[in-house]
Image 1 (spheres, rainbow, N blue to C red):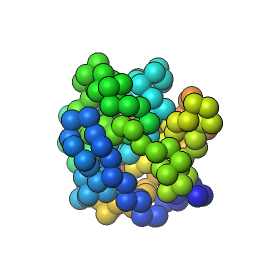
Image 2: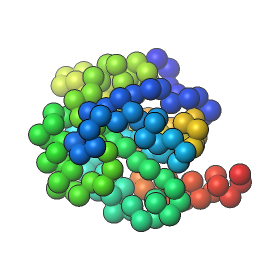
Image 3: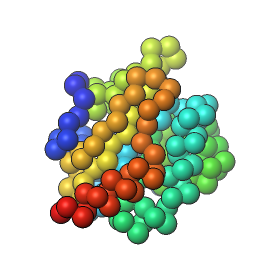
Length: 158
């Protein structure tokens, strides 16, 4: 699958999440600006910083009507420990099939062990991609402050 481009509809993804049961990403984000964060795993220090940054920015994200969701190949125990450790306040999906997610989004996949590389999307309230960030390795990812500024700018031009 090629990368998703601006204007593309985000694919239908259903996730088993740590605290929110089964979540359909596009349904959960519908009517809001959405952020989809694919992270390498709870073991990744860069992912930990990224996810905790989004949790800390919740008030500013809420103010702009931005909702986040994250996902990885982590098992439920590791994902739950990550949510607890960083007080993540958005749905965190676990146990995803890296190849299936990559096929629908164009995300890069690490060969061995098998996991998704850091990939982030900002979606408009209709579920269309307004920006995508693909990384083929450990660094290069969406950060909360950039998303807040970007959505603020997009809204000012609407």
